[in-house]
Image: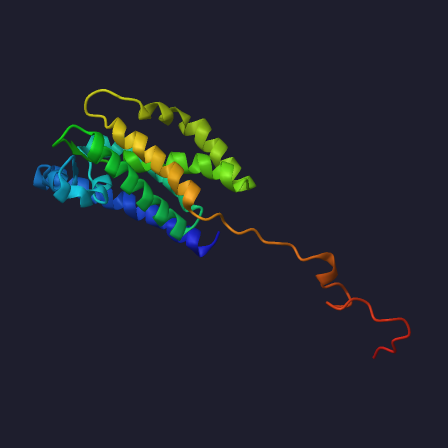
Length: 212
């Protein structure tokens, strides 16, 4: 495993740990103040920057508990593509999901949580397997669908308190990230005449060559 992949997987862990620290502080010490400060307030133009901070906020301990495992699993699978790709994918998903929430939620409503990232990672992994068509990406895609395929129903309008907007636009953000991020380069095998056989790169010596 490359250093980039290891760094990316560790970054997923740091993201998740940061979310937990913030939620514990907010829940026990601040009474939800961080949610109101850093959550997405729909139709509030001055708060549009919160599309980057809202994924780190959660409504309560049950909320973050429900998000932790899928975030770690799907995030780690995305991180397997490397640190740069993981960070860019996360940024694209956060922006698309956040703008969707900001535009389509009821004016003045507050939205927090990492579910947009989770649905985005899901969409990314599914489309990436189709685009890359490498064995590892296809295996990851199949496992993602088998274990988390039910997430797709979360893009439909849900009950009160569940942001289907974050789910839907997070999923679309993941598809967008998988499509626009450059494909990983494939190693091209050397043509046979450029191989390094027992005679080196220049082939066998001509007939009658005295040698050494």
